[in-house]
Length: 309
Image (cartoon, rainbow, N blue to C red; front, side, top):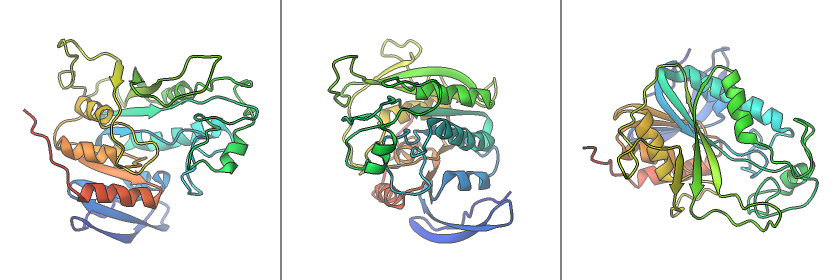
């Protein structure tokens, strides 16, 4: 196993060759900014080169199936079949499990969508959003031929991914409902408007690190699995950045100061920003070079670490 290059000066970047376990050589651009390493490339190719048992906590939100086009031929979420999407995520998180310490945890945020035969809307797999291309709209305007899906079926994607990861060896410890105070509007009249997403807590082994004193309810009681989080200003330049408070809770509950936090679908770099604020290190992997550049710029602008009492 080859360990990624650690000899990059703070705030600089370069393209460097790396040998794979098969003896082949691949290249990607990487930044080191303070305690954050930002690797630009396909996480399915980069994760196998990370050393085992080297990360304490993974906090991530992969691209949702059929929702947005991130303008890269190797992107996840644009698969023809949702089953292929699930299979690809299982492959990614199998490598995440390998690089986690024995007491490490995975915090996974993932959204759902509907099966449709034609039509478009303001959200979901047929959404009229700025970075959804006609190719993805066309592909997802036909009900997928799997899972017995019918027109207008809710895919149940978060739980399908969760059960697939469970079957692959992960221990599914908790399901958290993230309630959005300001959710995206939906012009539906035949079902309730969706205002929630799912966050799953997975463990590598039965005994794992979880600091139940790090985040408590306002009453002082143990934290519940129902998180009501308000909107945050989106200055990241990414269409699907998840809130810092969600990431903050996961990192505080699943790691200690000085630990390494991983996000294989870095997007806007929120996980890295919060990790630095909480005095952790971070490894971020992002496929889209434009989003990676924006993340690097956010990190260069500086983050003030929190004073942990």
